[in-house]
Amino acid sequence: MLAELGGKTVLLGVLDLSTSDVESAGVVADRIRRALPYVPAERLVVAPDCGMKYLTRNVAFAKLVAMVQGAELVREELQSRVWGESVKRSADGLLIGVRRGEKLEEP
Image (cartoon, rainbow, N blue to C red):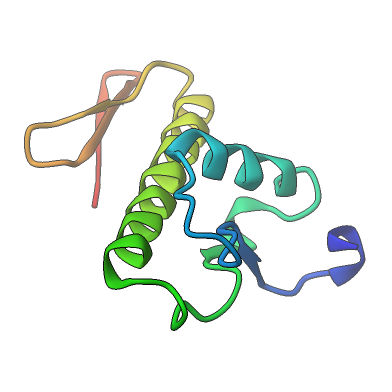
């Protein structure tokens, strides 16, 4: 179904909000990776699957943390492919990579 959306931006629900079980960052990253063959990363927006009002505040926050960490994992993988070398995170959280002697810093 994702392949049929053409050039649209897609909100991808990566959290199961029907349960209080908190996904790991790896599970979230796997869900994101499964969409990438169908939707380019620049058109993919990672989001919860729906509203979080039935979850406790602690569970909702933990799920959002897992969502952010999973997205970071995939983002680092994609940056590594683009730059062709390993990308490292600086002390202040910036992604740093080197290509042809250039230094990359991204927020």
